[in-house]
Image (cartoon, rainbow, N blue to C red):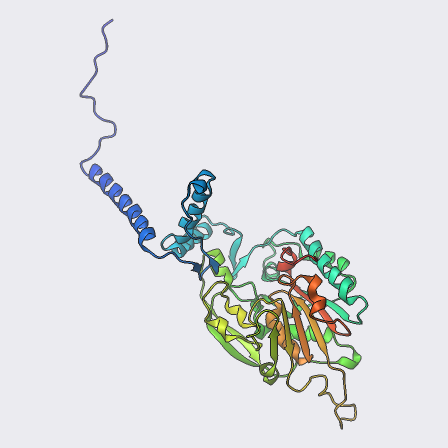
Length: 412
């Protein structure tokens, strides 16, 4: 059999036109220049220590040593450094979020969603263990300090914005708020519940943040104050407040976390003579002495958050003294002739960050307010700073903290 001859003149089934090879070379050159530019950027530019958008510290360049290479620490740390210091990182994060939500039509991106003009962190699973842990910490505080103190004890759970999103759209996936309420009610049988869910709406919350707007909170504060008033301790926060603007353009923490910006909104606050004259004393920071702290409206360092304008942000232990005319002592007798002499009223609030903006409104009914955040102070140490006797005590926590409560410190 004769071998089959090879046809050297067989036409190429994928003919390459004259312009394709130069285009390929051009694409390779552009790609090379891009990688070269990125490399030069890392070599020339000064690394950033902090991201204002994400409100967190950025990874630093690792030190190159033989042991760090051997145990893999150098490569993993370098990967984090490159990601954090990548040029135009915030822009690429926006592109990634846009492609996920609008290109692939996903409901959420990394747990964050945009619904009804609000950025929100979708929290769809009720964490029974976390709810139990939070209630256990409150039970410890009651058993240790309140049970035999003569204090009147209340609790109020603040709904988050997802609660109101699911009211407007039942198909919106959220955690089981009713089951959470039942569980809390069973575990906190030592305290009287206060419900403020009807005093809030979706518009009560910032569009780009998890927190609520102070100028919307007067009805909620009225509900809480009324619920904590006995017959001889009636009070009301119906006095007029003046609405002031703290910041014209406010972007909340959800913008940086999600990697997506929507139009900013103003941040307002309420004031009157009583709030302006109140003195706030911080356990950690002796320099803070006012209810509102404008320093945080311009601060751009680690942990920067304009919401810290209210009571200077997170703090373990704050005492607010009402230096204006006492709301208790200013009440008149039934005849209306002489002021009645009433005992000074004191309120103790165990709280999270939501309490910072509503606490000043409680000055309408109390001469002194003590705010305690056991995320920053161990509850076993509280006896060194305060004596519990005949006060009103309020546990004021958001559902966000209750469903993720392990930041609350356990007793020593």
